[in-house]
Length: 266
Image (cartoon, rainbow, N blue to C red):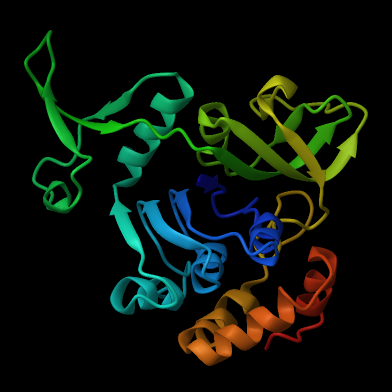
């Protein structure tokens, strides 16, 4: 199954990722423009066998050690990595959301990526003769995002820094949205993103569901945890101990969040 958990700097669906780990899902093909800590956790927990992405790391800190271990050493599972540029991923998501078979862009010219990614092809514009890059549309089986609000009819509102969440939902066969709150009326401000109920499969009320990333208007980013993660994830034993205690050892995401907020992770 192909699953895209999208979010950019904030509104990252940590709660959904932890639930995937608790349900012991495996053999997943994950898609994400910028895999960061939650993907490091999913990979290290053995849920993932393939990753399609355009950048991976611990923002402002360094590498994702569980991602590196999977790629370099096959632990806990060998990981097939399909790498694109940011622009390439955005074009592929937009194509999927538009019902098109592939995305096009002026890109990859002079890049080594086409040598390592067979999905990158080049075509000639029938009008100008220009050489353009083409990549297959991204059409996940399931897209999962976090947002600020949903109303009782299932319409979803998000604002602030957004990435490709809208495109991911529109491109996917099914979409799950975790939200900070469920309200009677969205009262959407100008230029906010509103996803209508008919493109959303399920809404889950999960306050704090983006923690330790942030949700604009609700809570800040927990920078201390991002720094601490570098040490936690560096060794297999410390990573497994953390997953056992903080993901598998709690009943729900609310318990996990309270442990982190208490500083127990440091």
